[in-house]
Length: 372
Image 1: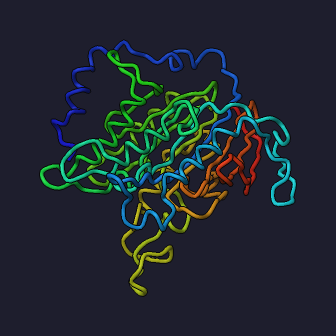
Image 2 (image 1 turned 120 degrees about the horizontal axis):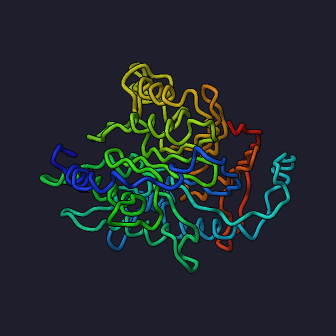
């Protein structure tokens, strides 16, 4: 349990004095000249690294959660800068602003949760989880064909955070997964992570960063999560939006849960199953939690929300006025490629083909965006 005297509490207290003078450069300068935007990046979700010791977790092989499929996915993502934005998808014009243009090298790959299948792949006693090791060997920036070639912005989902460890280490799995995110993204006066966030919340592990005049926010499982003793990051989110996006600049959010039928399903007292028509307890997150998050976003220039959780269906949809994007699961080859320009947004969903790096684009979306 993330108690009052957790390691995080001690770190936060001990760093407090030193961090008083630590102001991220982008925050200090955001009220001066508006930064331009020319950002191409990738989003993926539901990697489900599944290795346990020398084998896989139960059912992983039949579900396709194999290292071979992850390598096929990585090969496809790494090969995108050698290709062009699609002019046609399924025989129809894509209508993308960038149609036919060369794909720029992505600024990063953002993960929308479920990096691992079983809380990092722990064993009976605390130790480095084999699934987290597998994830880091594939989806941590590196060289060669077996590593992703771009900076990776991690995000956690229910498979990373729901599993309890054996007493007295009930929280060990979650602690390791959260530590991995923190080590990779949280800057301090003592430590510079490989991919520093502009603003990192120690309590919730939500974090944000900027690519030029574009603001991006990682909300982990979902904004406002309190499951398994998680600490809500909603207050942090409200302050982050006020501080970093109060001038009307475009914002994109990432989390694991969405508003598709699977993400919002509840217990159906008639059929005794979870489905989107149920009126009982929520399976994943409640309508009240969903509304609390949406309320926090009101008044800001939110141009897109990317999520995961549902595996087989690529989705482009709207929810209460927000444009929402969900690729297929990564172990099924899915990804989104997004470009934000000075006043336009292009999104394509695609999936890996063979192990040579081929891709198939399945969905296209484009719109004009406001700069505030």
